[in-house]
Each structure stands twice: as C-alpha cells, then as structure tokens.
Length: 271
Ligand code: ATR
Image (cartoon, rainbow, N blue to C red; front, side, top):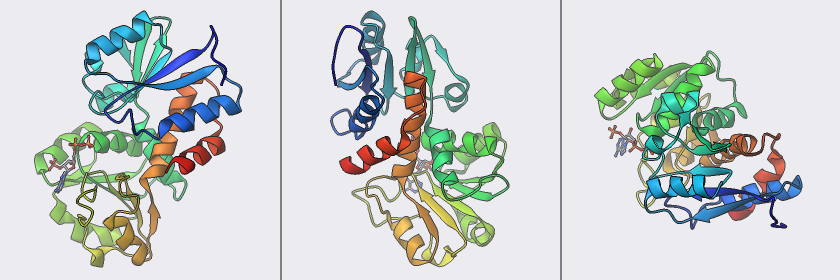
C-alpha cells in the first residue's frame, strides 16, 4: 500500500475496532484492484466529535458498528432508504461534505441466504426482533420471502411485524410452524459466547429440508448450527453475512465492483 496525498481514508468506528476482521478484507481488496484507499481503525469515545472529525479531516467514509449504529444518526445529514427504515447505520459515505448513512446488514444477510437457496416464496422464520432482526426482516420482505417473526417478547415481535408487514408470534409457535418452514434464521444473541450451550430451538424440530442460518459469529458453530448439521439441515454460518455486508460496503466506498474472492480469502485468513 502506497500512502500519498490522494489516498482516500476509510475509518472504522465501533467498540470492536481492535479486533475487527475487516481491515484485511478491505485493504487486500484495495490492493488487488490498485485503488488508492486505506481502511483504518479509530478509537472513538464521543460519537458527535467522531463525526465532526470525519467532516474536518475530509475522511471519505466510515464503517460503523456497535455502540454507534443508532447514536450516530443525529449527526449525519441524510440516511438512505435502508438505514431510514431499519433505523440504524453501518456505513457512512462522505459525499463532498454531505454525510450519508447507509445499512448493508439486511442485504448482506439475504445474499448469504441466496448462496444456498431462493428466498422468494420461501416460508421463513426469523427468531428475534432487535436491531439485527429488523435489518434482515426488511431485506427478506424485499425478496418476496413469506416471513414470520418469533420473539421472546411478543410485543417487540408485533411492532417489527407491523413495520415490515408480516406474521409474528412468541417462541412457543416454533413447534407448530417449523415442520412446514423452509428457512430458519436466529437473529437473537442466544448461543453467543460465553453461553455457547444455548439454543432457542429443540433439536427434535429440526428436519433435513430446513436451511438454518445463525447470525451469531462467536462461536462460528453455535449449538443451533451444530444440531442442525446433525439433523441433516443445510447450515449457513454468520461469517457469510459478514462477508456480504462488507462486499456491499466496498461498492459504496469505491463505486467499483468488489473483488469478492479476494475479500473472502482475506476474511478466512483472519478467522
Ligand atoms: P441486536 O441489535 O444485536 O439485534 P438487541 O436489539 O438487543 O440486539 O436484540 C436482541 C434480541 O435477542 C431480541 O430479540 C431479544 O429478545 P427480547 O426482545 O425478548 O429481549 C433476543 N434475546 C436475547 N436474549 C434472549 C434469550 N435468552 N431468550 C430469547 N431471546 C433472547
């Protein structure tokens, strides 16, 4: 990488700035295409001041993660359609001084699904109604999936289902619905380390026609995915969603078609 006066800086704001796997993924892609960009970490404590720095230093773009996905919004100039309806931002583009928030999480999740299956007209259960679920739910609806949102807190499921326009229910509905479901997605934090022995789904309900995706990336193989594999289901790991949300961001950062294989290889090498 050659830094010079024309280098476009892309920063990363979020609590995982020290451990993020994204640096290698973007920088190797810039290098492979000979693009004069650099993707670098920033330690941000005050998000308002962080955004001021983006303006003052003319930083080209920012990747955004927890805890700033929502709190950054009041300091931006505009949100794109996805960020607006999701109510959260995972990328900011500095368009000649105008800061525009976007969100590639949901579309990234759907791209991960589409590596294994069609989404249109599939019966899909989404577990969870938090921020991650919200992003995925809209993207599934866009693709024409037949979506049901199930959540521990029924009222949260209802609110999200009303926004997306789909079915909803409590987790108890799983046993009735799973036998006729094509795709099951866990978008809750259940199964995440250190509580790796938890799953919201009874193994006996997992049938081999089912495709199971988990957005929990630590551990890579959650209890849900392990039991799904043992039951003969196709499984989709969270790192596929991580890859595709990043691939979509690369296009926003550069306007250029992303070198997916380079990005995939770099991501694998850092995991
Ligand atoms: P994120 O932004 O990562 O989606 P979040 O907004 O805090 O995180 O959402 C967490 C989701 O995991 C919620 O759907 C939550 O269910 P509730 O709405 O009932 O809180 C779900 N969740 C977390 N822990 C859970 C548990 N032990 N059992 C069932 N659902 C759980």
